[in-house]
Length: 67
Image 1 (cartoon, one colour):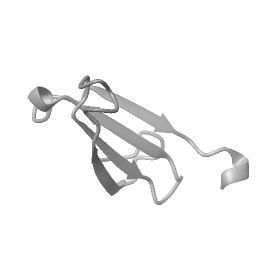
Image 2 (image 1 turned 90 degrees about the vertical axis):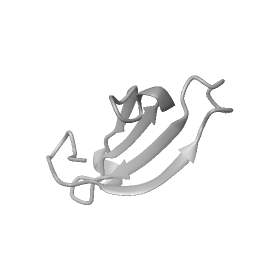
Image 3 (image 1 turned 180 degrees about the horizontal axis):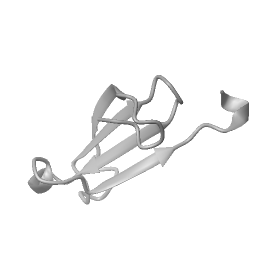
């Protein structure tokens, strides 16, 4: 997965089962971090869509204070 901010290859951190936390709206949460700009991406997927498309992506960008 490429970073949407700087196009560097992101590092996968972990996967979490989030069915209970999201009232079964999503099945899996995958977390990725960019080693270059420190952007954080959370990818939520639905089991039926796991091999077709990403359901929701949340991108967190660092502020100047965090760099």
